[in-house]
Image (tube, rainbow over all chains, first blue to last red; front, side):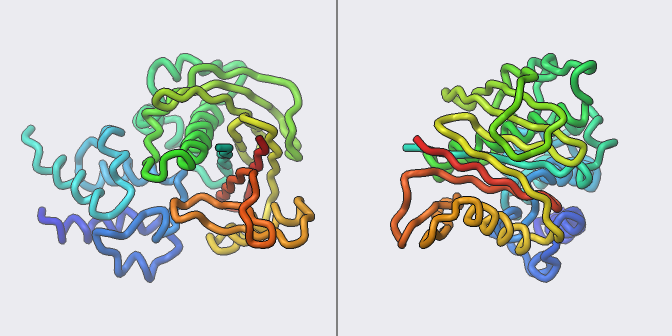
Length: 85
Length: 199
């Protein structure tokens, strides 16, 4: 799965947690989850849990703390997906 | 330098079933923190979100000292949690807590109230005033405007305005000059809260 494909799936993960659907449609790697998408911080763990289910991966919080913008989310997901079993 | 940090969690807006799953809370609560959980004093849902709100409050408090700080709740450790007597807040609280936490090398105390509707927390440093209010709408713009108006209405100081520091935290000004107080805002769903600290 390349970065573009991960981004498409990531939009689905983020959809329930942002009211700014227009901005979600146009997100790029610099988009900040809280500042730009106005996602409440109380939902950050929900996003991690949903991402784990979406990509069949496990995200520890050391990795999760990097997931404050879209590019970093893709970095973490990409690394976990491509990690040898 | 004075700072402030607070948080609020609207309990109607959280997934209570998911909250009680170890897969969820273990993302930011370590085994030593989980040992603070006393089922006869607090529900697991309230315990989990109380720790979350304490950690978020600490992050906001510390952000004033480190603009590059990233919220990493697993690296903020709650070390003590106690039920205590009435707090300096307008909330009609059912349960009130105090606690201690550590973030990197910094030790901080916090105060929390839990009602059926929300969990509100503030860092307890300096002379802190703290308040919670329910609002009609839950969209981000309404929350943001409402919490600013809430504080300014309570202050009753003509010429007072609020601006956002480039690092993201709010600052209070009077006649355009920054005041020597620290403020912090929180909102979640239909609840807003502010904390204001004097040195």
